[in-house]
Structures are given as C-alpha cells and as structure tokens.
Image 1 (cartoon, one colour):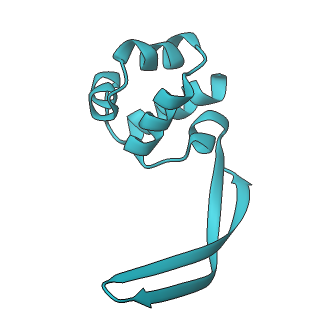
Image 2: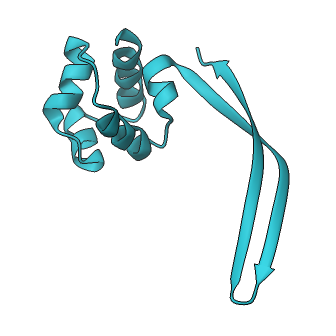
Length: 98
C-alpha cells in the first residue's frame, strides 16, 4: 500500500501531526497506523475509515490518491410538520490528485 503510506506521510506533514496524535484523534491503534506508513501493511478498512473521517478525507483519496468531486445536480426540500428533509442529488467525478 505504497500510495496509502505516501499520502498519510504527506497529510501528517502538511497538518503538522504525529502518528500518535492521529491515533489518539481517530481512535485507531498507533501500531496500526505505524504499520501502514512504515511497513506498507494492509489496513483494516474499518480503521482506515476512522482515520479518513478524522482527517476529513475519503478512503479513496488516502488509499489510492483519487479525489471524488461532487457537483450538486438538484436539491429537493420536503417539509412535513416539525421535520424538514433536504436531499442533494450529486454527480460524482473521479479525478486523480497529484
């Protein structure tokens, strides 16, 4: 998982974070994150999802370097008494991130 390793290294450096701070914030063991970065270990998808959520990035971006661009096509609002429902219909464009 070379792409994951490089992406995590870059994100940590850009955000001035350590493996320990990422582990603490994402509730993923430090040894797991260290393994992904240093040893190229394959990640547990649940743990990778927690890291991605904490960093506010997609799993696709972390693991493969693919960013999903979303364009709102239509927005629908439904009002029903005390509740309001808003639905966004989006078109997803996949684009490689340098």
